[in-house]
Image (tube, rainbow, N blue to C red; front, side, top):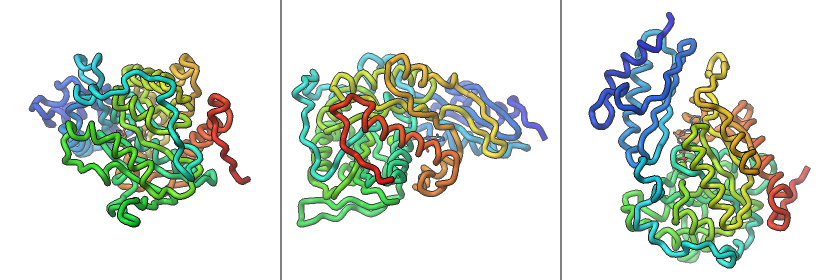
Length: 378
Ligand SMILES: Nc1ncnc2c1ncn2[C@@H]1O[C@H](COP(=O)(O)OP(=O)(O)O)[C@@H](O)[C@H]1O
Ligand SMILES: [Mg+2]
């Protein structure tokens, strides 16, 4: 039985968006791709409304799956800032009111973290591009290269390591003051989610952030690490800039989706790190193309390849393309990252390849004297 796009749209017409408009009329739908019983499309929504859209995404997948002949449905939810907010950036005004606006070269000289050879940031110009998923699998890829790897979840807007690494326990304290990180999949992990309650309103989170970050860097028993991967808050506003200055970074990896707007954000990410003299280790294009789960056919849903082109234009390395794939999402959201749990998959190979490129950049490619001394045993 062949499924048509019209049948899919008819099913979606029964799914209401948060304001009640039928989904096909809500101006959020990408082109609907139907291939061999597999359906894919994306919803691009205002960043501020993402939470409200999550149940809609689930309902849309369910509705499409109930169309006779549909074998699988994958709906990507991607966040877009509202047009009016562009100049201000995605942060609320109070966060933007933080000090340290001007990047002075002296600001960035941060003491290293004892025992930690190199700290790198995984950042994105906007939320929902797969930054955390990329960060986790990159960290695991570095682990597979024989490195001792730590992960710090510094994303105040959406700490996701507890979920992505299935961490339910809270860290213990040592001697009343120092925190003991959690061990998972061979990674040493700490999340701002352990320190800042999800219920804490954003207006409080802003000022709390820097002290929480300092605490996570300096008051956690990280032990000896070759590399620490920091999942940064999305965006390029003052909160991000401050963090980029406060964390002793050896380099940054920018994650982008291929959509044009995401690339504009990625470009801002690159310039933010350049501004604080942190070498950009490269750009990863996530949800780069749609890989059909059963037939393996590849469709370039979005204008794929944009990030590679953009990286070339900006003179920063291109680190690789990660397909949009149900396995990545399901495993990631279930706390079973693909590099750890499906190590023989093509996805895991792609992430490991990205990890090697990141390491190569750290060891020599990115700006000489800032490169850490990392030795991998053969
Ligand atoms: N390559 C991918 N294929 C399919 N789903 C993905 C992929 N990368 C991320 N996702 C999914 O997209 C959503 C957002 O990813 P996440 O890593 O949480 O993004 P961010 O940290 O940028 O907000 C999650 O549900 C995640 O599982
Ligand atoms: Mg995240």
